[in-house]
Amino acid sequence: MTTEILSLPVEAMTPASFAPYGVVLAPTEQPADRRVMADSPFTCDGRTTLSTIWQPSGARSFTRLERHFGVTQAFFQLSGAPSVVCVAAPTAMDDVHAVPDPQSVRAFLIDPTQGFSYHIGTWHSLDRFVIGAPGATFIILNVAPNPTQIVDYASGRSVHHPDLDGLPPERETQLHGSFGIEFQLSL
Image (tube, rainbow, N blue to C red; front, side, top):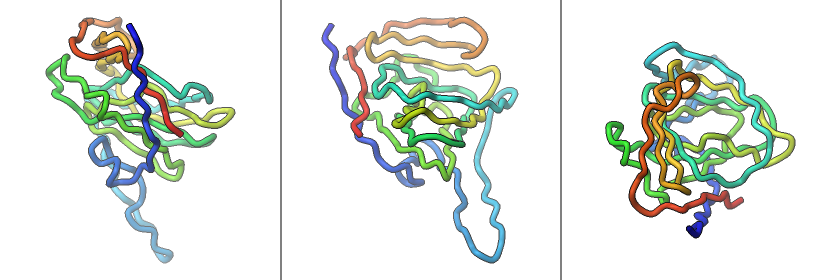
């Protein structure tokens, strides 16, 4: 099978550009004379977890996207080089075959002065792509258990995990359609 390379231009993550995929977590105003506390949406079906992630610099391409069924999952970059995350809008949550059109995947530059959270079901790259040495550190708000579906655009294989960090996969499906795809960041 030949591999089709889809180039993803990296764009700024703004509240408007990221709205189909999630929420940018930042104050809505910054007055000089008073403190402002902005509500930030976070929901989960289970026990909230807080973790740190070290992501080394490296890959600029990928073939897999994942979505979570019970968490809005939030990220905050604490330190390190500029980073990118790739996303696609949620699809029908009850249909394992409802995966995003590869042409709909977008790449966003993470602004380290703000956080972001996904809508439940938003498809996203498994990693953040750190585009400078040596890497970056992130905080993640997540859930346990974490039901997740992962689709591999190279093979067309879909795997459903009842708990991404615990139980083995419960279902694997071979999807139909055009696959043999690799996504590549265009910096």
